[in-house]
Length: 507
Image (tube, rainbow, N blue to C red; front, side, top):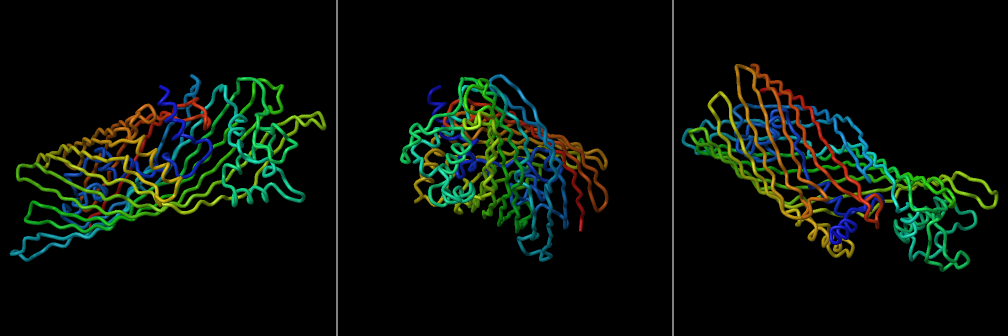
């Protein structure tokens, strides 16, 4: 248990939005099941089937299975639910989002040379949603560790002279100076000190480096409101070919994009109001932009008896990340000069920009099997393997990145995923369903559980076009620290519900 607490303390400090940590690395390397409605309805088990624009992102050979030119547009409506629990106090919050799940085109060029071993070639371009970052969560309960305790620990070692305003100097001026010269931790300490959450142990000494929390008691009513917004997607340029009738080959060149925003508002009311603070609210906002590159190769082999086998390899993904943060603080403090309680709000309106860095996410290997029952239906199974311990921050020469890479190597493990899907056709209607499972990337699954879920869908096939609908549900539990540097943890059970509508047109 002690080892678990120490590990959690080192990797899960989320209230203070520290950029470039294990949480960021996993956020941008773990993809969900998104795509067109047929793909989603079968839980993405398409590696050996092909014939789906979304499936090209799992196995590039999928494009070569198409018989005709195809265009597809898919819309996702996400209705996510988060259930938070802290100290046996449960809360629930919903969030609805709309995203483009898939959009693309695939062109088929038949080879009319009967003496050639190449039957056809395909060229495709497709966008697929990898992650929809939509979440509202509220974590609430009574804690024995105060927000003021946290600020006192952050301020430890910071000279008092740095935290005091000079003549005619504004909050924004000093906040900017500290960020440019001393870093984000000193900025955070400055906010806590100026909002009267902490006091210096020797206030007459400008070189003082010790601070104490300006609160009394051991019980604090705390509320942490978390919002996440944004998306992660992949644009793929695909080349495919069918060889000797039964062998399909494919290549993807991928461009990746990230747009993510996360906001924490941490509020606290001490149950003992005899101290200098009776209300505090600390807000932090993180905004992330990213662009990356990867490549994929894949093959599908079709037997005459209806069986199909697929293999795929996805290279590591190199993503350049740019991040910016904002902070603000409010407090209701006791003013000794006027003997009254006063409200204070410090909003520097300063954006902290971090230096651009790179995340290398690991390669993936996929193997799949499918059995097609003529025109009646099919069953499909897909397996994928990823060694999450190979996630790396770069440049490695950076000491901080070196520490984070050691944490990644110690905390993460290789993980497997399984997807099972089926389809049954009656006239022009297709009935679909699927199951999916993904192993936790953490060695200790108490930090993040396995992901499990199911999917359902219908397809309506007409001459020249098709309309498909799907529903996918999955769930995952995560644990996190209520405040960094202290082991009081909360849990979030995130239930993801996706509704997808697709229109496909034969060109």
